[in-house]
Length: 245
Image 1 (tube, rainbow, N blue to C red):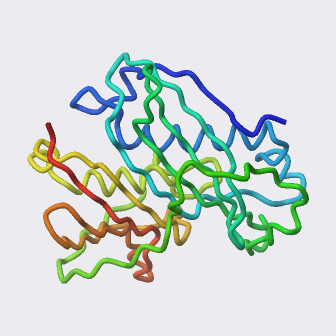
Image 2 (cartoon, rainbow, N blue to C red):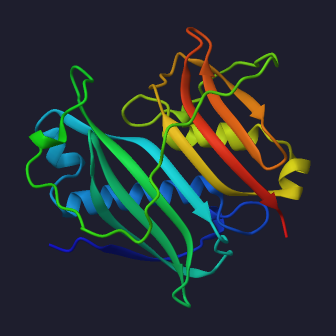
């Protein structure tokens, strides 16, 4: 059983943002995809859990970006399961350039839910989940607090392309809504270098959603995607910005 899984990728034209570098959206989806693929190979993937009427959900994510791959640049995506923390299964992901340098690192925390009751399944009930004994870095994705803001929220409906195969709001689309809430001039001057996300509740096609934002200082912001019907945060995000070079 290989506890380390790799993909060799090239930054496609549709992976990049307007600056010709890997977009935050595709960065997130590549993290999600390699985690799913490796779980399948280890015998704990979507199809395996579906037989038990269970499924994985991403609960927390922490990403630190040293630099983003450019359009056409080759890089290696590497992942490995790194342990259990209570109800959470931990998995790390690394983006490694052609010189062998880690340019992006991420750690993810996953829950298993019962597909009928939506209750959390204890990982003790999933026998023999494999993981490596040593990690390359010690940080874990933690709890992100809800932003405080007196600004009026602008709610818009969920769009067709924002709904996934499970008929829920796609996790990556939440992140896109947050990124798109900053204007062009802000992105021209600032580059996202770190983000931490908590996925709190599921969105559905009937939801109207808005982005709430708290500017802590020049580089640090708190954001959430809020549902109009009950005022709930569906996700909470901590963003760290650096100056665009």
